[in-house]
Structures are given as structure tokens and as C-alpha cells.
Image (tube, rainbow over the protein chains, first blue to last red):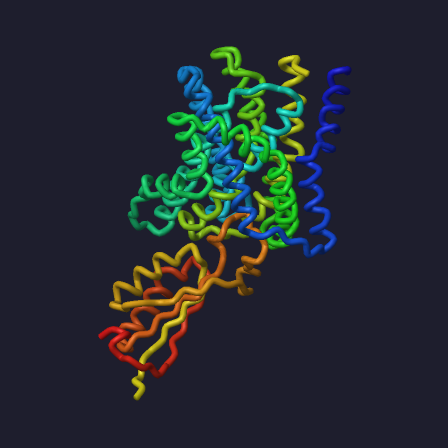
Length: 335
Length: 107
């Protein structure tokens, strides 16, 4: 009983933390029809800053760390990315009134990873003084790319069956396109700079101190966008809303379970387990949609972007993160 | 002294800009103009005024190309409509225009 009360307390206190407060604040003013605009260029710069910071810290830690510790979590990341897409392919995409392409594209987006959700979770863990391996966020491409590639391949296979034409889906161009996207480019560049150079002075004086403040602006933008996209979601099947509500939590809990296995097998930290769960719970908002638009042109962007941005991401941040933190405290006894 | 030529205008999603440009160049055009913008169509409002979480791939571009050769202009319009507009949203139209310096607009 006490455990449940503790759980509820952790959960509620998260709602008052800046990360969530700014997200909900953004939704609130958008609902009131506010004309507050944060320029697009600022948004892009913030995304760059966050991913560069994640990359730098990950790279610096890998430089001094043990690569063998990363193998199991990296494998879980790939498994989760693919598993989530297959799960969506056999549930959401088979529901009545759902076009197969729309379902597969949505599953692909939910299997992919949101850098902003991940950054929000890092700040929350920091505030809770829960330590995690800095290379965990850098595992994000291991989940992101396989999910997007698999979704595009599945959609290609489906289209072939429909039309009877044989058209090979080429995997490498999709991977290349993902890696060249602005989010992953920044992350990978940061990783390399952290690995091969000594960026500590700029990291400590610039990237790290700005992280929390910039994230709050990003959360505000995400909140505004989430509200703005709700109208799009209204025009597609309601199953997308149901999926977007439930899938982030189911994916996160699956990942949490795999994380616990890695905790016992290779000593993954509790914070690392929580971040793995957040990664699986999140759905791509920056790199995923354009990749899917190009890769699965038959799918309706209103369905997958609406499901992800307006419901999936707020669910992953507002419910998912507090849930996994509370769960972590329950399972690992951290406080 | 002016000459007759055909202008092809394509208004579509930015995500397929490169594919359209490839079609235009394959038909021998020596140049084209791309203008980014916003608007509303069957696929809803598109704007680049506010930050879009999904990035700029969903912005609108207007691609204009003028060709002295009417047949080449028609081939561009047909290829764009047949190959790309099955799934991507967009419109394409042709206009008769009068140009100066004919050598600038291909064979």
C-alpha cells in the first residue's frame, strides 16, 4: 500500500517540474488561441544544441568506458525498435477502418525515438539525482533507424502484394537518409568530437549549462504543436488516438523489463533502465516524419504525425517519464 | 523583341523537390526557381511561420521553369503528375509567357 502511495507521490511531483510544466503550459496557451510564436530557426537551433550535448557527453564517456557494457543495451535498443513496429503492424494496422500503410507508418514513428523526450527524461533524472550512463542516450540511433527502415520495408512488401509488381525496397538509401538528417548528424558529430577530441571546456561552459533552459523552450514549442495537431487527428480514424494513448506506455514497460534483465546481466544502472524505457516509449518527432513521408508515400501524414505529436509525445513525457521514474524507485529502491 | 515560351509551375511538398528538379533537368532546362511558402489545400494548412516539429519537409515549394520548347514543358508536367502526384499533394500548370534573351531557355 505504501509503495502505491509513494508511486502516486513521485508521479504527481513530476507534473510540477519545469519540463512537464512548460509542455502543459504550451498546450494551455495554444488552446486559448495565443499567437505566441517561437521562430522556427530557434527551434532548430535548440534541437541541434540538445543533440550535440547528448553526443558530446556520450562520446566522452565511451572514450573512458567499457564498450562491452554497451552491447546488451544496444541489442535491446535494436530489438525494441523492430519489435514495436511488428507489434503495431499486427495490431493497429489490422484494425477495422485503418489503411495498412497508415498503420505501418504510425508504428514506425512510435518505434523511432524522440530526442526531445529523451532530453526531458535526462533532466528529470538529473533533478532526481538518479545517475545513468551517459552513453545510453547515444544509443538512440540503434532503436530509431531499425524502426524506420523496418516500417518502410513492411509497407513496401504490403504494396507489392497489393499491386503484384516486384519492386525491391532498398535499405541503404533509407539508412543514409536517416543518418544525414539534422538530428542524427548533430548527435553523431557530437559523439565523434567527444570520442576523438577533448571538448570538455566548451561542454562544461556552454552545452551543459544551457541544456535545461533550452529544453524548457523546446517543451513549450512541443506543447503548442501538440495542440495545433489535434485538429488533424480528428480527421482520421479514432483508433490512432487509442493507439497513441496506450502504445507509449506498453512500449516503455516492455523496455523497462528488458532493462531490468540488462541490470542483472551486465550491471546497467537503474537510470539507464529508465532511459531505455523512455526511449522505447517516445515517438519520433524530428527525423521520423520526413523519412516516412519519403519512404511510405501512400500513408497519410495527418494520421501518423497527428497520433505522434498530439497524443503520443505528451503521453510519453507527461505520463511515461514519471511512471518509469516511479517504477525505478519501486524496483531498485532508489530515491 | 520577345519570343513565345512555356512556363511550368509546380506547387507541392518540399520533400519531393529533388525528384522534381531531376525531372526538370532531364528535359534540358538550364535553370529553375524555387520559392518556399505556405498555404492551404486538400491536405490541410501548411505553414512555415511557426516551428513545425516535423521539420520543413512538409512546407510548400513553388517551382517555376520556363522552356522555349513547348513539348519539353508538357513532358515535365506529365511526368510530375503521373509519377509523383499519386501520393504527394501538389498542383501543376502551364502558361504561355513571352521571354527576352531566348538562348536562356533551352533548345
